[in-house]
Amino acid sequence: MFPIRRSPGLCVLLLALAAGCRPEAPRPGERSLTVFAAASLAEPFGEMATAFERSGGGIPVRLNVAGSQQLAAQIVRGAVADVFAAADRDAMKFTADRGRVLEPAVLARNRLVVVAAARPDVDAVLVSLLNLATPGLKLVLAAPEVPAGRYARQALRNLSRAPGYGAEYADRVLENVVSDEVDVRAVLTKVKLGEADAGIVYASDVAGDGAAAQLAGVRVIEIPEAYDVEAEYVIAQLRSVDDSAAAAAFIGFALGPAGQAILERHGFLRRRTTP
Amino acid sequence: MKGAALAVRIFAGLAVGLVTAFLVLPVVALLLRVSPRGLLAELADPEVREALRLSLATSFAATALVVLLGLPLAWLLASARFPGKRILEVLVALPMVLPPTVAGLALLLAFGRAGLLGGAFSALGISIPFTTAAVVLAQMFVALPFFVGAAAAGIRGVSPLFGEVAATLGAPRWYAFLKVIVPLGLPGLVAGAAMGWARALGEFGATIIFAGNLAGVTRTMPLAVYVRFETDLESAVALSVTLLAVSFGVLLAVRTGPFGAPSDAVRAGR
Image 1: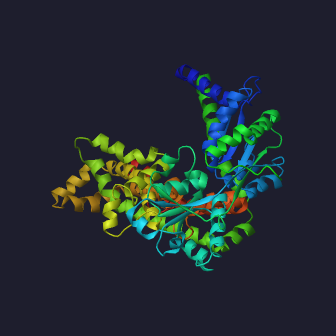
Image 2: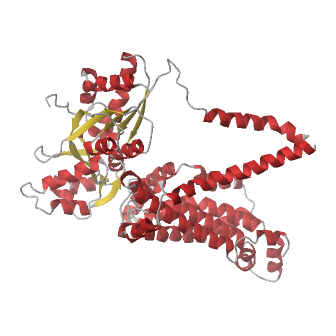
Image 3: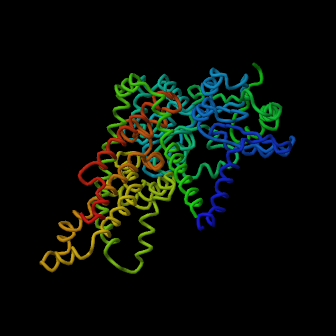
């Protein structure tokens, strides 16, 4: 009779499987909000999630942080989320064109900076932005599909028009790219580790709260404002969410004074309030 | 008793059906999403050909190195007794349970420019990250345990008597190993090499962290699939199907080849 004696274990297993398959029933009082946010928004949105939970109806926020283009792809392929905050309009448009989000609003602005590994050999070679074109320099950028990567390539093209840089500056710099990273934080990490000589990241990645920790191992080289790219972050509510009011409340919080103050503290620029 | 036996049979039948469907359905889903025309169009894309060439070159190089360097270790683990052997066995198996991203980070901290051996490599003028060599190293790291484990099991399955007989006939130990033990344990070695190769071909996490992602240098097929998933799903599916076809072809060739699955024959005493 030993198969019978074994069967309780089997029952437990089957029950566990069955329980796992049960569709999530809406449980009042157990609301939660899923927010998909660009990698560069990790810290301010973490803080915002806590502040929103405390201030509002106590709705917990679950954050999913990755490259905007990756989040957009996930949303289009049916990922369940309530709010999407992207680092550029392209990623948002990708989801809007497929009818997945409502009208987006501008969330914040950001600038780009060059980060250099704090190593004597790099210090000697990389003094100004012109040196990014030095043959053999190991440069990492976010991939062209990633907003930060697109902005970085735009900034390099802008610099090609600057006096003394030369029209082929951007191409020469791009020759030095040793890796197309999947998000902007991976770029910063490879430079911080000293594996890459330099990279291009957002100003907010190396500024604001916790900048000291972010800056360990890197040296920042500013890009002159005339040639820098202004990254524009947008936020939108997803279509057909369970709790539309909560999603709208979170977006309102992010765009309101409390949310904007948090973003500013993390090195983002305030959104322009005039249309 | 009879009822219980029947219940077990029904469960076993259901389980076989379920598990087979579970493994086959995702593959079918991939195949249903791609047209032969689309597949050919992708294969004409130079970037795809580049990724495929890179994947094949690195995975075969990694497998060759794993077999060459892993065989002595497998022999040691299969035939020698020494203190700390259990610990060594666990250490060798460790990369199998490490998440590939952890493996990538560990490789970077060990062999990166700023890593443990970075200074030594710099002195030699070598920098490993962001090179094709880094891709091969990442693949070796994850493939070695599969080969060493299977090869050790294969060697253990050969009776030590064969080696002893060869020794009494005057053969040195290494000669007896290469000429007697290796041929007899070949099915295990081939299965281990095939498993290691498959793991190397599919390597993603350690590669993207340790080697980076650059077309033609470090962007292997799994990385190309990942990059394209975000921009061009049809292309990602076509690339996946290509990778699937290559893996299926190689594994089938290994299974049906001369050293394929004669494990049953060996057990039957043939």
